[in-house]
Each structure stands twice: as structure tokens, then as C-alpha cells.
Image (tube, rainbow, N blue to C red):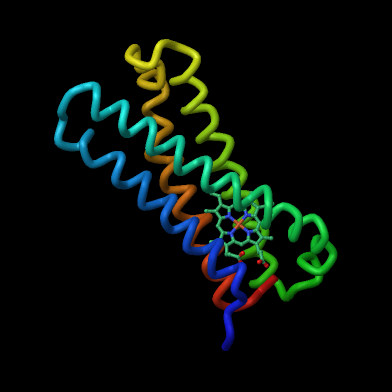
Length: 142
Ligand code: HEM
């Protein structure tokens, strides 16, 4: 089965974005200084920026022109696509809330620490969206 070139590029960018989120958490796990938490913040912003670039330039245009096609897919495929869209949107909104709460204060004050409980759920929802996106790509669903 031949995978489309653009989808391959988008998939690689999305996997890199998730890896950036994981790398950013590592210094936090070993409980070092604020500088590493700031690095975690910057890597998360970079991950969200990479994510948004492909969602806005590729996924939303394809999604908006394929809604009728997606609705007509067999139940399993259409559930995968709708779940992908819902989890993807949720991850992006949560990501924007977390990053927003950081950057509206001086960075060293770590305003995002008030929403730290959102971080693991956001990561898990993001990872779910990624797995579903890779399934959509590999099985050529859309
Ligand atoms: C955390 C957020 C998201 C992640 C990690 C993600 C990841 C992916 C990946 C890896 C693919 C396969 C590459 C491809 O076929 O182009 C994909 C495809 C797709 N995604 Fe997402 N996605 C996210 C958000 C969204 C959102 C919000 C939408 C809704 C507008 C969306 C709609 C689609 C569509 C329609 C495709 C198929 C594109 C195609 O046929 O090439 N995704 N996604």
C-alpha cells in the first residue's frame, strides 16, 4: 500500500511534535531548576506551533472539503475520523490554555503552574489524536 507523500511529511512532523513534548518533561521529572521548566515551556510552544502549522495548512482544508465523504464512511472508519477531530481539537484548545496561562505572566513566575493538572490529560488526548491520525494515514481512510 503506497502512503501519500504529504501525509508522510505531516505524520513525521506530528511525531516530532509529540517527542518535543516528552523531551521537555524529562528535566522536570528529575526536579531541577526553573531554567529547565522554562525549557519545558519553550519546547511545548514549539510542539504546539508545529502541530498547528500542519493542522491549519493540511488537516482543516482536507476536513472541510471531505465532511460529506467522512459522514458516508463505514461506522468504524467514520468513528476514527470524528474521534481524531474531536481529540485533536481538544488537545489544541487545552494546549493553548496552558501556554496562554504561562505567557500572560512574566515567564519566570510560571503562571502555568496553576493549570498543571491539565498537562497530563492534554498529553494523553494529544497522543490519542496522533495515534488516530497515524491510523487514518496508514489505512488511507480520508
Ligand atoms: C493534536 C492534534 C492533532 C494531531 C496530533 C493530528 C495528527 C494527524 C496525523 C499524524 C495525520 C496523518 C497525516 C495525514 O494523513 O496528513 C492526520 C490526518 C488528518 N487529520 Fe489530524 N491531527 C490533529 C488535529 C486535527 C484536527 C483538529 C483536525 C480537524 C480539522 C484534523 C483532521 C485531520 C484529517 C482530515 C486528516 C486526514 C488528512 C489527509 O487525508 O491527508 N486533525 N492528523
